[in-house]
Amino acid sequence: EVQLLESGGGLVQPGGSLRLSCVASGFTFSTYTMSWVRQAPGKGLEWVSSISGSGSFTYGADSVKGRFSISRDNSNNTLYLQMDSLRADDTAVYYCAKRCVGSCSHFENWGQGTLVAVSS
Amino acid sequence: SYELTQPNSVSVALGQTARLTCGGHDIAAKSVQWYHQRPGQAPVLVMHTNDKRPSGVPERLSGTNSGNTATLTISGAQVGDEGDFYCQVWDIYTSSVIFGGGTKLSVL
Image 1 (cartoon, helix red, strand yellow):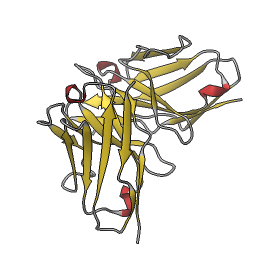
Image 2: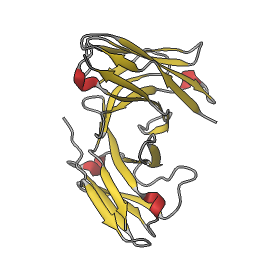
Image 3: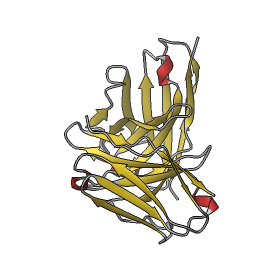
Image 4: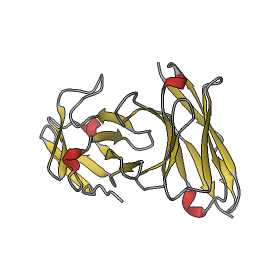
């Protein structure tokens, strides 16, 4: 059974930093592109960033470029999101998601999310 | 950048058919996915590649994609179908994942 367990969320002041983690199990982690998707309170889903299985390729939304960095540790089946220069509008639940393999783009599995609150 | 447009809300009577739309320029040229999110829960994939149902998704859910509109059809709507539905595509030109704004489905 695929499991994705996020952690690292919390309350942080504007301009601060936070690192999210997502521990994966139940599949061959290094085979899959992994992503972060966020959801602000009462709002819709917003894609944040993706990283290829090897970690060689990364993609990110314009709203987080230069501030957020995605990475992975395939030896420990863990996905990361380093978030710097946080702003109030970064407040959201952050989901870790496993993308399908091959020429497809859907998210097969999602974690339960971790809440990031940016406030003074 | 590419945009997906979904109605804010759709209501359907219990047991009737709901049609949720997702509009985008020439969306038929893209592969469309649909996710269902119940309050307080993570999204769940209910349709991918326009009309493919993941294992465990009932046959009363179906998908189409033509012209500028993709549609998720829910037949025999049940109370458990309530929640938010999001469409999603991959924009190859910007290497970005695009989500629609979501539709809140109410079953009356």
